[in-house]
Image (cartoon, rainbow, N blue to C red; front, side, top):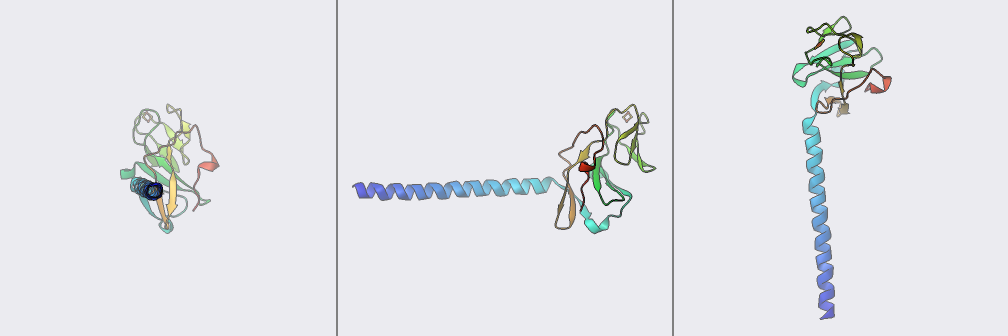
Length: 149
Ligand code: FES
């Protein structure tokens, strides 16, 4: 009787560990798929030239590629009252109340008081992916915000 209970406990323990592993693994896979599904695919790295601003209206951002190769995914939404900013002479201009931003999205002319938001950029399999669900509010531009590929 003792021996039978011993083996029963061992088998139940193995089944429990195996079930826990399968549940944990399936959760990990679902989470990984959800993250990659939410990223906006901007294109292959080699399709972007330096010193240019690429509009992605459906992703609601501009991809700015600077002379040093750094990139920013800058929100199209003005930080004053939310109008759509337009690229203008190496920067951005808001048509609603004339706020102006430089090429990094910093305020050059109010009424906007805060730099344009940016989105995280991920490089994967030679492609630029932008996490448009995670806007980053910022006071100004810092070199650490740039993504280099
Ligand atoms: S909404 Fe852009 S300046 Fe007012």
